[in-house]
Length: 509
Ligand SMILES: Nc1ncnc2c1ncn2[C@@H]1O[C@H](COP(=O)(O)OP(=O)(O)OP(=O)(O)O)[C@@H](O)[C@H]1O
Ligand SMILES: [Mg+2]
Image (cartoon, rainbow, N blue to C red):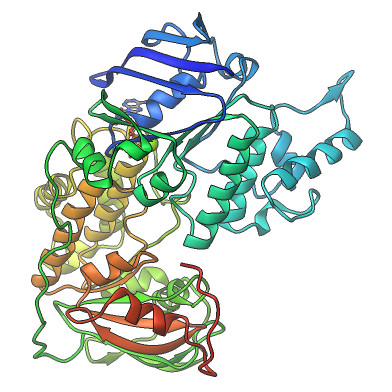
């Protein structure tokens, strides 16, 4: 059995102390969950452990079974038996699965890549993560869940004793999450020590043996999993008592015409779906994976399957989607679920990222008649505050933000386009619990100011907690709507698993 330890780690970036004294320990055959708010320092800590930040660029000590480790770079950490799956997926779609697996460490003999042995090892590795695909097939065809499994297989290719997983499940559906958790369970049984970062506390409690919490770059607690509770972990993460994170419910009295009306919409994916959204209203869309939730939003916005029949009306007029750009100009915005392609220019500042789209499309000119840089900056600053983006200022470079905070910049970018109707597709993936509460309140406030909101989420408590009404889809069809004042998760699930023929199928949630 081996034990890996980090002691009093301190890491500074220009102007920012990311870590101010963190210690943790993980042993073979154990899963340690690492939890903390967006920007707490989790990814930075794991980059130190995996040699991304070399010895000398931080203070404190790394030891393996008591012996100090000095990593000059990633290869040194790999040699010591440590492997990492980073928060951002790194699969290259143009390459085959096995090329992706061995990228950077091809098994070469006298400089030639040994194709036969690579093929054998590919099959082994893919089996280990339960990924049933041909090693020669194109990586572009993998779903996000499969890509995540491939990332894990890739990390296993160096036969690590310790595996670090930075938010391996944040972009996955409940079914895919279960698969990844099973794979981690298997890896652990083979004696590998795992450190897993996650914002999803249910899965942390499902898989971890121990849980370490860090806040603002400092170690707060370390507990065996059965000696702690969700509420305690949340309290330690946010540093205060957090009660209900959902805004207070109230029945919406709708007086006006709907701002967005969808009638009998049919595409390749959805069939005959109708719904409407009023100003001030938050409509949730629930359904299992593959029920067509995201595709529905994308089709209306202009980035999804073509509309075959049916009608969309926006502000009382027939809305024919010509392009996403046109949709934005008309007052629609879509925050997508795709965490890999956030649509940010990482080398630009937060300010540039949050205002560029709005400026290019002339949203502010249209709204005010002329460009007012001061007004735009002011709104960007307000959103920066409201969304609690953790960065020194609006002028910070986006690349230097933590994953969750980059996510918030994406949100601010869309809010800057002054939408009248906002589509949110899995908006809180990778966002910590405390920030979620603030985010829900922000969406509710925007709705109260007259915005119409449509939110798709796989998390039932989220759709129910945030929306006024929920439309439930199953296999591309609308199965019914529920009022969230009276609905229960069960009533939504019952509709979500209903099929056209009214029979039942297995649920994935
Ligand atoms: N290269 C860098 N340059 C400057 N600051 C950085 C850099 N990398 C990280 N930071 C800062 O260090 C802090 C910790 O970031 P880190 O990515 O470790 O957070 P995290 O806990 O992983 O958050 P999340 O849950 O959002 O992924 C943040 O304030 C971040 O802005
Ligand atoms: Mg991170």
